[in-house]
Length: 351
Ligand code: ADP
Ligand code: MG
Image (tube, rainbow, N blue to C red; front, side):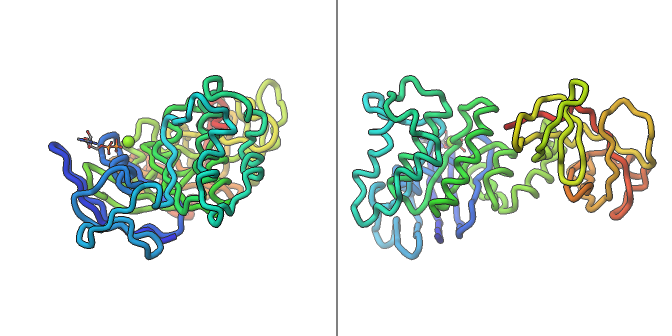
């Protein structure tokens, strides 16, 4: 999928200028509230007309102000999932899901509804009405309906923002696997750095109606480390938890970590703030923190007044945040060995 977009739109107090080419990858649009993300989504889907510009997808023109082309939304084959799942209240879950599929021309019905229902674990919900579904279930229904219309692109405008944290991180694997299994690329819109890191390979950063930069979600999180309220959030996939005196010993790469929160069975996703890691030049031997990792410094980066220290241990990476003075006192350079202390309670379970 190759999407070329070059558009302008002016409201009384706001102007948007958005020009870029999006190819193949799972792309994220990141920006604060009011930066113009939803306006881009509406224009791409055909719900709003830009003042000027051109949009083409795989060589087909969707909009052109000079050539006077403006394909209506239903002809664009771009599906949308919003913050609030907009389901038909009077229809069952099943009818909601099959709505787009039934309206889709036979030739375009290339997806198997049963495989999708299976993947999204929707079978048990089919007979219910949308009124008695949880927020996460509604989003899965909305996703299934969008996907069955066989779009060539899925626009997801803050689809997780209305969900609580637990649900948010439960839905992410579904969003990703649907895209992979059914080969539908997506444009994922969010103002959350963690969501960007989990959902996107490439990030377009918007500010005040303009593209500020295009980067990777990882770089975005690193440059914003000092400014973000919780610093850089490390995302750790851990597994194999064993009860150990009221704490849980888990595998994380080649290391064993002790965490306070029960990771459950299978793989769990935890976050750890860069500010919760304390660095020591030498092995401190006795400390109250339950985790002490011997690490190699693999990269140093600057974020405003802070220094980010990328540590590698047991084949996994962590980012710790320190002030420049601490960096000097510890004599940190790339390649040096350092000890990282982390309290068991500093790890927070996401899913
Ligand atoms: P975001 O999704 O990033 O929060 P939006 O695209 O919704 O941002 O809005 C960007 C700006 O455009 C906001 O200042 C908003 O008030 C303004 N805006 C959006 N839609 C309209 C509209 N139909 N009429 C006037 N102003 C609008
Ligand atoms: Mg918005």
